[in-house]
Amino acid sequence: MDEHFIFTKGYRNTLALIVAASLLAALIVILAGNPSASRIWANILLNNQFFLGISLGAAFFIAVHRISMAGWHTVIQRLPEAMTGFIPVAFILMLIIYFGMGSIYEWANPGIHDPVIEGKRAWLNIPFFFIRMVLYFAGWIILVRIMQKNSEKLMTSTDLKYDRNRKLLAGLFLVFYGITVSASSWDWIMSIDAEWFSTIFGWYVFISMFVSALSFIILLAWLLKSRGYLTLLREDHVHDLAILLFSFSIFWAYLWFSQYLLIWYGHLPEETAYFIPRLHRYKVIFGLNVGVNFLVPFFGLVRSQSKKNLDWVAIIAFITLIGHWVDYWLMIMPGAAGESSRIGILEVSTTLLYSGIFVFIVFRYLSQGSLIVKKDPFLEESLDYES
Image 1 (tube, one colour):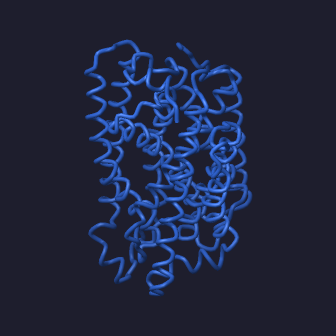
Image 2 (spheres, rainbow, N blue to C red):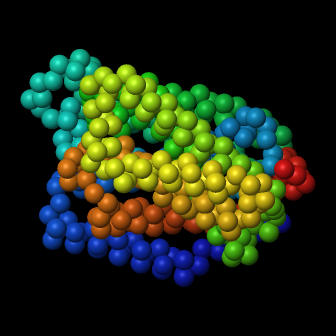
Image 3 (spheres, rainbow, N blue to C red):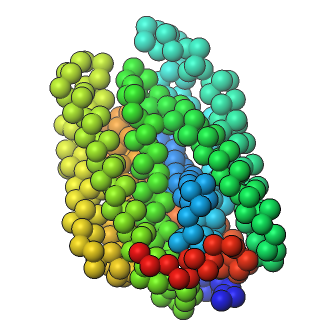
C-alpha cells in the first residue's frame, strides 16, 4: 500500500528536453517569422489559462468530494493534489501579462474612445485588473496549500480533526472559487472582446476547466498504472472517472449550445459580433471544437463496458484534453490576435513548453510522499468500492 513514485533521471531529462526544444522552437519562430506581438502575448495567455484551469479544476475535484464526504476517489487523491502545484507558477506568468496588456486587451490602450468600454471603465482599468488578480491568486494559493498541508497530516495521523478540518477548508474553497472563477473569466477572457458579454460565460469556462482536469487525472492515472504504480486502482474507480468525463462533457455541450442558440436567435449586433468571426473565419476549428468536446466523449464512453477500460478511457481523455485546448483557443485568440490567429509552430511549441513545466511540477510533487494517503478515514471505503 505504501507506494512511492520515483521521479527518475530519465523523466527529468525527457521533460528538460521537451522544455528546451519547445522554447528554442518558439524563439526561432518569434525571431525569424516575426509574428505579431498580439499573437505572442495571446499564446502566453492561452496556455496560462489552459493549465491554470487544469490546476483549479483539480482543486475543485478534491474540494467537492470532501464536502460531499465521498470516499471512492481516495486511492487517486494525490493526483489532483499534485496538479494544483502549478497555481503559484501561473500567478507569476499572469503577472508578466502586464507587459502585453495593450496587445491583448483593447480597453488597456490609452486613447480608446468607445462608449461601451467607457461605461465599463470602473471595472476595466489596469490597476484594478491586477488588484483583482492578486486577490484571486492569493485566495486560491492559500486555501489550496492549507488543504494540502491538512491532507499530508493524514499520511501519519489518524486524528479525525484533520478530516473535520478538510471539510471546513473544502467549503471555504468552494465558496471562494465559485465567485472568483466567474470573475476571473470575465477579467482575463471575456474582456478581450470588451463590447460583448454572456451571462453564462463563467459557468462555461468553469466546465471547460473541470473537464480538462478530469482528462488530465485520467491520463496521469493511466501513465502511473502502466508504469506499475497505483496497484490499488481498479475498474470501479476508472468507471467513475469515465462517468464524470462523460457527464460533464454533455454539460459543457449544453452550456455551449445554450449560449450559441440564444445569441443566434436574438441576432443582436453586440452579441453576434463574438460568434461571426469565429464561425466564418475559423469554420473548421469552430466545428472541431464542438465535435471533439462533445461527440468524442459521448460516443466513446456511452457504453458501460467502455468506461471500465483504462486504456480506452485514456485515449478519449487525451482527445478531449486537446479539444478543450482548442476551446480556449477559440475563446482567446480571435479576439486577442485578430487576423494573425492560427494554430502553427508557435502555438504548438508554446503549449509543449507549458506542458513540460506542468508535468515536471506534478511529478515532483508526487515523488515527495506516498501515492496513497495511508491514514485517510475513507481509504477502506475506496479499497472496497464498487461502482
